Image (cartoon, rainbow over all chains, first blue to last red):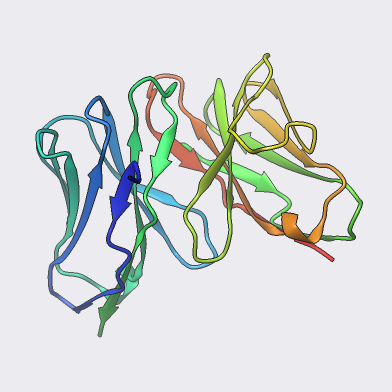
Amino acid sequence: QKEVEQNSGPLSVPEGAIASLNCTYSDRGSQSFFWYRQYSGKSPELIMSIYSNGDKEDGRFTAQLNKASQYVSLLIRDSQPSDSATYLCAVSLSGSARQLTFGSGTQLTVLP
Amino acid sequence: GAVVSQHPSRVICKSGTSVKIECRSLDFQATTMFWYRQFPKQSLMLMATSNEGSKATYEQGVEKDKFLINHASLTLSTLTVTSAHPEDSSFYICSARILDSPYEQYFGPGTRLTVT
């Protein structure tokens, strides 16, 4: 079983819609959760971090964490074509010296 | 803030030569830096964790004699790919962790290595 799983997509949404990205993790002791955006040929860019259960909002982005169900999600409101990228979920596993384990990423395409 | 640079951004080298990649934290101190490798259409794979002033910790399957890591200061870590071969061609990305934010990692722009 992979430690961090994401639906690879591709996920397509029309411009202005809400894009919903999901991630599950296997280690119940995981402490920190991140969403990175990676454009093709570029390195990842941190867009959200979340450490406790519930929602965290930052602009058009909302991260949701449910530790009991071991999932974390990212909602992108009012999606724009510039949001088209691969979104990587990353988890800091317990006992991992704070290293990050990445999911395989979900490719999002926002159609104009 | 939290800017990480890498140099070079692209490098092409011949098989058997060595290549050094630098990773710098520009506006913060980083006691820990991480080196990743990413093949096309795959996710990031952690190669090693680099701690300032101590030996790097390599992930299973990564040859420490082939991928030499030096973290000489709180703002600089280097990765040297020794005796490079075509299968080493990849996108190498470093990240740094801010001292007072122990979990967030900020990535450099990456170095695309092509070995001919």
